[in-house]
Length: 459
Image 1 (cartoon, rainbow, N blue to C red):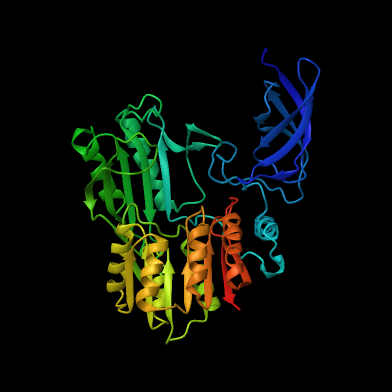
Image 2: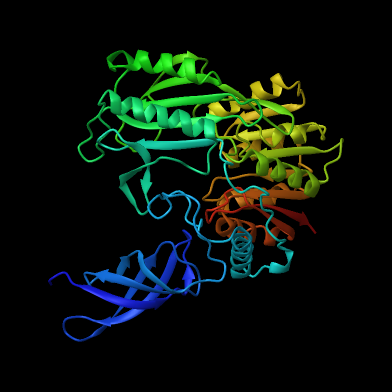
């Protein structure tokens, strides 16, 4: 079939799971038969009417940019960033922030209603007074020609070179742009993902809002000794960016397109930076998981503390504890806290963070969730409170049923995915748990993501 271009006027029925427009139309194929065409349309809002161009009409799905907004949403605003239309970072910059919060609250309610929970327990999402420049960590990618930027929306093979970014701090942006110019000056090639050749892969910038310390990590396929001009870059960073306390060169020859390292070289400073949350000091390495929005992360912890109502005589389990973000504030308020995390490096960091902050009533186990809970309950008995902060995919049915069998009086569930959260807590109903309250918190303004804290109590 010859490729054709057809023009359609469509209504945006809803936004999909990635926050992009979704619409369904019917059109005829070459034989005159009607066929369903599902459209994904970025940069639109619910109930808008837009004109789109569709190529290859024989396909069943198509992604296309809106050619014209015929009827705009009343909450549509002008995007702040010049890269918005192409960059894959913030898909909702064209939506008024208060309207974003309403949509995120409704999404949490919809997923709970799907599992037959009463959505009235969901509170309105807590937003930010300043929903910009909130991220303390960003990862940028090199294009084949050495340009540094972000992936194009919907196309991970193409990199959009950037001039600015309204999600990271000015210091982070300036350092990243300086590295990008350095790579261009020395004509250093970016990594070709198809041919698996080239030098430069990623740049990670990380900054502590509390201390101002900044970390840079450059990921490349060769060690630093083979890189032209690297000594000059080190001198520039040390001279122009004195708040950079950790400058790392990461060797990564693996095929997977992730910011990971086989060998770590410290070019300047130390291998970690210090950050603070809720008055506690944490050491952050390049691969340490730490909430990327420190202002809202503190609200998450405060909400969890308020909901849990822990007492000085109680014992507690922190499941998926990471480096102790929730463990340390809770440990100050309970008799004993046991943290469980499968990543051994995170457990090492949690132990070190507890020691650095003078916390002596914690125990941290490098175990998977189910085996770890068995060990803890056998040795310490039934916990009064259990907190879990699982990955985006959720804890899963086996873990949730294991949690139900612990018979903990109160469960605090911290989630970055309301869909997996709703499914997970459904597994607790046979064990006599009731969902008391759900508080969404917006850690990612200008995007479709939402976090939440929930309280479940045992009848």
